[in-house]
Image 1 (spheres, rainbow, N blue to C red):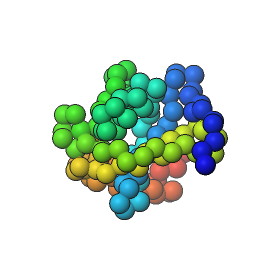
Image 2: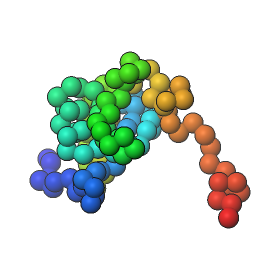
Image 3: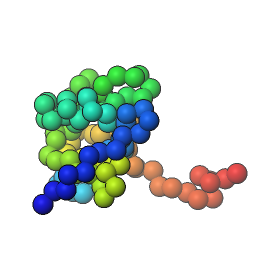
Length: 113
């Protein structure tokens, strides 16, 4: 049963969206969505984000062919982030890696003051 709690967008009209490979459970990318990106995602079947740097919609795979096929979208308990379950059609990261999370965190180096 689904509760009628609407998504909470930030002051810029954005909500963080974590994309997960529906088949493996691997986290692929964290990006941002606005209402238009969510609507485009459902209409096209391809996960679409809002690019904060370019200030425009960004359909993942539009130039590379590495689309993320939408399976489902869930919201967290506070409705302030989204979990997008998708089927990747190629690498998700612009570096060519399957996931953007391919580097280990190193506390001594990554938290150096």
